[in-house]
Length: 272
Image 1 (cartoon, rainbow, N blue to C red):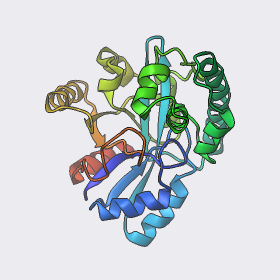
Image 2 (image 1 turned 180 degrees about the horizontal axis):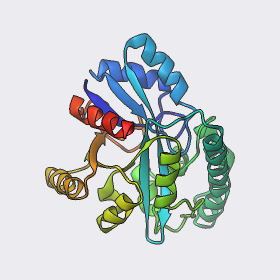
Image 3 (image 1 turned 120 degrees about the horizontal axis):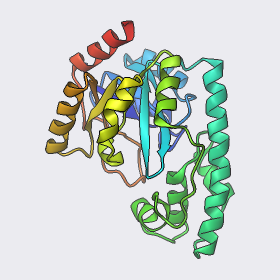
Image 4 (image 1 turned 90 degrees about the horizontal axis):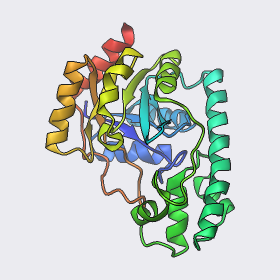
């Protein structure tokens, strides 16, 4: 049961449709995947339908972007009730704020001599949740930078001159939201946030796992987060954080394959 539990579609900042993701997962030898788009669940149903056709199990998921004063912390949610109306209402509010944020980022970029169109950026997101990766792609398309990573380094990272804060959902808020939706909250790519000292506090609030096996984690980091998970009684999960083509990420579906025991432990936690 090879699994990848961190995948994005074009409903957030990925480049492939949910159906394409399922087909690519099959071709990569995966049998279980989770669609974990940023702050949106609209890609789950099409993925589920395609999964039923191809024999690929799709676990409904989400990735919340949350804020602390000096960093972002991303919280993944697995087995959520993606049809809950209250959840859809909250996600709509977050996405509307994301849209407003784009206009503010564009104003900052214009003052920095990198004028791009907010409408073009929102167009890149289609019907999905717009974010900084779409701004980065627009900057590449307009020739202001050569790569998505350069766009983040030069303009868009958390300390960059065009950064704009978004709707402030705290890590604890995200954890509680996922639990309310019947899901399992997991700390995504913890090495990116560099706030390991918060893990015990978040565990006390209901955090259930750590994304130990992540595309950019070194062997040393994997061992470090294995130890932290054991110490805090947390589950271990993993995934590629696959976004698709032209996103500045070279990891591919199939580069991380969790075995059955990780899915079984998530299911056991779900029953508690």
